[in-house]
Image (cartoon, rainbow over all chains, first blue to last red; front, side, top):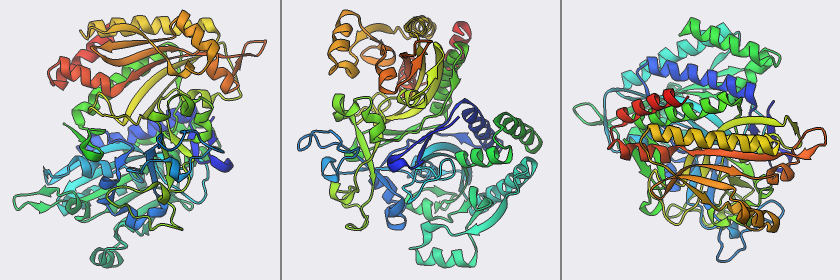
Length: 280
Length: 280
């Protein structure tokens, strides 16, 4: 059983029950295991960053509509009591913390200013946040869990990770009978970046794996965008590192598996274990 | 290696490196395992709630100074661009979402309006958030991970869980050589509640397990405060459920173990495995 909550009756947030939790954990263990097989160790990012950290990635330039910003209450001028379930902007001190849209930011900040091996791979999971104009339970939440495998180093390494995980996602979802379709998509990171936007039109840098219209995983090539922004270098010449990432929206996998198994979550769990064993 | 970040140079947020992550995961697996042994299944709460949900627990009445409140950007009046790393309150739409201080809220909201078995036990981990006047790396973060085991049902059950976990925490920390001291503490939930505040003075309802001055775990008796606020019932008479919780601050355990093992995290990991095997 999942309990949902939200403002104005929206199903924006979910408390997953025991069967749902077990399934999400099994999925996460599987994707993390793929990362480990690819040589990734795990790091743990926080679900809150200084606005100055997220600004480095143009998040407020490219998708301000998705942003949640957080701040403490202004107790010098206000009482710190909500009225009708809300604090007016004036009741808050400045918003200097941002809630991240995606997990991989933590990887670039972790390696900020560092020299990395040309075939660095790391995995991490985080709570991500998106302010949407509508929510739809597990399929579109204000806060959800995203597991990522991130490649940093040479361009060849980042492309090798993308191609190996593309195969694995298609094989795994095939075993699960999910019938995922791989679709080229637009990566909004580059919409304000002339050169990269042009490159993107020539060669797609984001592919989503969709069940119907719902993207439950994606592979993303960032060229050296994050390497430049975080001054991450590789190789003897100290070039800016290239990066790519593979992302899994865990609650969306749960939603799709529950649908395919007609809400028999025990059967879904067994199908994940069996498929993971075959694809492993 | 842990990377820290924050505003104004504060070490308010941490990205844990691979060795730190492995140790936190081992600790969490241990505490979760204790929960499972006590019959707890796991649920997954979100790190963001409607303000109206957190209001039920008097969080804005009792500790507004700790609160982080989040909202989307007001793109009708503002540009959605931060200035000097901050959004002014006026740049934000109303703050209708609150970041939780503690993990166990998710358990009471999960069971809201429900009838529970008189000896219900559940476990959950969440990212928690506290706005502090100073931060101190892993010892005092703006966002940290808290694992909890929560008991709901009869008063006897809630006290039985508290007493069994008190023994186990002392035995485990003894095996680890942490020298924890159990201290009575004040639970700020009840400071504005006359009857419960009086009871608390007569009989402490919160005990902390401290390493020096740092509390790394606590056991908490809430009587039927959360049962009333969330209309959780038990037994044939439909009485409001009693609750208690056992909480572990995971980054604080990491900080203390790193100190005791002089930053040899591999040795710390092995000591946790050994101690868990002996206490399990």
